[in-house]
Length: 460
Image (tube, rainbow, N blue to C red):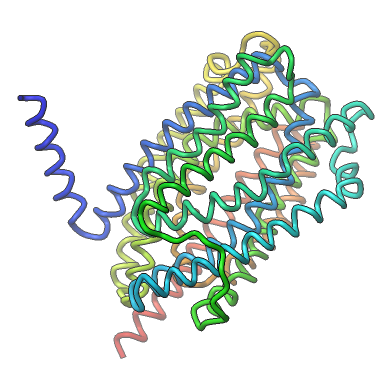
């Protein structure tokens, strides 16, 4: 009885908390997404630990990472950009014109997304012999041949992950955050099972097969959830409505910005492939560890924020937007700065605990720990940056994101060359942190200036 009473009391308190101010609603949603994301990252870390145990930083891991970077790049550019352009308009149409009109907009977006992703997938498969050799200049012929095999196996991920991003965004727009946040654990979960049960027979191909099977399962799960909520998922064209034209208008700069922003990761991987064997794998292991607090914070905050920010923008509550921006930037830095210092201080023991076993040696631990320290410097700025990006997306100011991406790519290439000559592979991570710092300052200034203009316009 006491246990049931406590659960009921907690439920009532939680409902009261979530029905408070917009800032409280964002925080409560962020807590839900954060907890689900933490579970996903624990499973993902378990997968990375098993990969390190089985393969270390050898050529097999390098080949898989280069093979998977292009599919990830395409998904983030095409599907991620569509979400950035679609969701604010989708919420606006749903709030102002009703559920039926928003459903028509969603159906048209799904049709366009599938078509674009399908055409792009065929294009990158056909043109792979042109660009992959340029990305793998330091690879041996055998390592290059393996990269091609893994690349062709992982390309279906483009279509499925694009659908996943769209379905997850629709769930988040409906303020149903938990399922979309927890479903990504399927891919690492399936991969872990394959590595433990079939590693001897499948080898490195277990990673590619696990990735594909995982995203297929994720599409099925999200599709069933949306269908039960009464959201029609049929791709269908309802004409070029005013709302769809607004999505198209925002899509071009969003895609260009994502293209340039994601190019920095592509450049980093390709430049790491020019260094000593295992450099791509070492960079990846360090990136995975630093991405835990980054993704935990940025995913929770950004996923929770965009529906509420879009509502405030739709109602022209500019003072509320400004207050939310200021409050969350302060909160983010208050939490993440001590965390960053702790991560840098404990970088070596963290890598030892996570990876140092089997094929992963003490020498590799030292290398990855140094890279992790450089990556960790970006954490406070990255999480705050993502919140600002979601604000600008809600304001339909994707053109600003496009321009900052141009500057990021130029700065990233220049600093990569400079820092690589100075500290080797660690320089690529240090360059990334510098780029994130620049982006944060640039976009914070731009968002504050725009909000001041809107507040002034409303006061006239």
